[in-house]
Image (cartoon, rainbow, N blue to C red; front, side, top):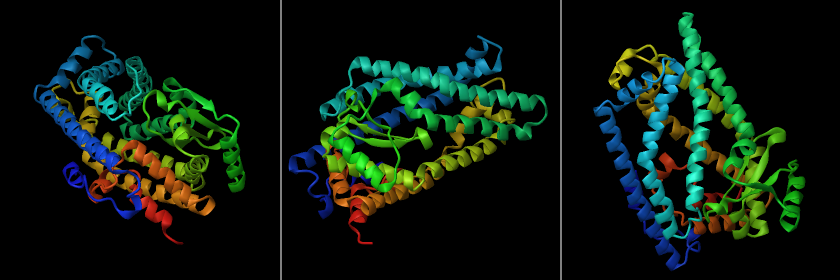
Length: 394
């Protein structure tokens, strides 16, 4: 897919987007894509090679023995086991992350991250993964042993599903108020022309929201974004400070109305049940594998354990996960079209088009991706597809 996509680099831009770049910027965007393509090929090759070596030399089995030598508690063994894997993975991936941030992104004028911020982000991410990821893992394993020991194993996946679902919903509700502040500063949008324009539009479409925040995305990158999160009284719209700098008031309101369109079309409420259903199916299939010792032995373990099965299941489930991802990406692209259409119906499609063009130009977006690559990997329609849909008469 990446090869097919690279064959589309340098193609003549369609009429709808031929004003996004001037000649110099277009050449720069082509160079940016080619550099990233080569870097992606390198990182994926290294990752695959390491995985093969780890499997061949039974490194996972060594990690399991190492954890068992430190404690006899099965939950702590599992947490240490996954901690060793996370540490090893981070050691392998950190040099690539440093190169991507401070060489590639720096070279093309995107990076604003300092070394201090980079390492602080990494430390915070370790802590967050340890708390949230470790908590979910511990919960699933705890439920597993309770139902296994009481000979009611057929109910294990149902209760694990219930526990994970509660955590998923809480994360969705409190993400912007609890998780985001760990990494970024969010401040309420100040009074002024932009705030007044947003308030006027919200009143017009009957969207009751006071929580419009500005996030300091410029501390890491010049790229701009906006997103909607939460629901009910917890809903909020977040605008990157770079977005406010790059776009006019009308264009910002158009982007914001797109986010409101997601809410009005109940996309958040649709995605949560879908995520819950997907989790339930995954846990049910996983429960069929948990008592099979061959999975633990295949990874080099001498003792059968639930954490080895979790790892093995993650590897062998990936083809199914890819198929599920195709369906979810298709749904996501449909949602984006619907949110764009909401802008066309309730605000002004022209302002959204100019906003999308500016954002694409600032990010050196690939405007001519291969259709197959879009189908497999894109969660959003391409710029050309969105413009054509916005220009299409009802």
